[in-house]
Structures are given as structure tokens and as C-alpha cells.
Length: 95
Image (cartoon, rainbow, N blue to C red; front, side, top):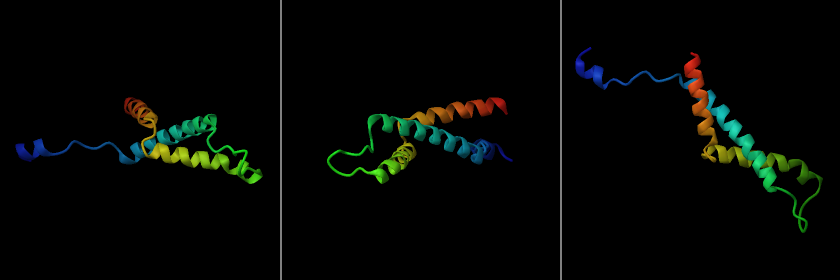
């Protein structure tokens, strides 16, 4: 290998499957946190004037969870990125 190709070659990339698993875990944790925040904020609760009933009460938790998962995948509040960075540092130090 000549000097030019050695300089322009890219360094080895970390294991993408491992990083994807860490990122998925971080997003899942952020989504769970956001689900609880939405619940505390009253998101999805039945309005007195319209709707309600047993069916709505049963599926409200699913709506909150899906909303929170969508928020986390779209960048959320940045919690997943912080969790991912911490998990990544810990995995790198352990291995």
C-alpha cells in the first residue's frame, strides 16, 4: 500500500449491529419515558362532552405508546441520544 492510499483509507467502523441494538434500546427507553409524560399530561383521556366508554379507556394506553414511539424515532427530546452515548461508552470500555 502506498502512502496516499494509507492516508485516504477510512478507519474501521464499529460493529453496526451492536450500535443498532444499543440505539434501539435507547429509543425504547425514551419512548417509555415519553409515554409516562404523555399520561401525566392527560393525553388521550376521554373528554366529557364527547366519546368515552370502555373501548376508549382500554386503547388509550396504546395510542400514547404509539405517539411516544413516533416522537422518539423523530428525535424526541434528545434523551435517546444521551442514553445511546452512555451505553456506547460503557460497551467500548468493557470490550
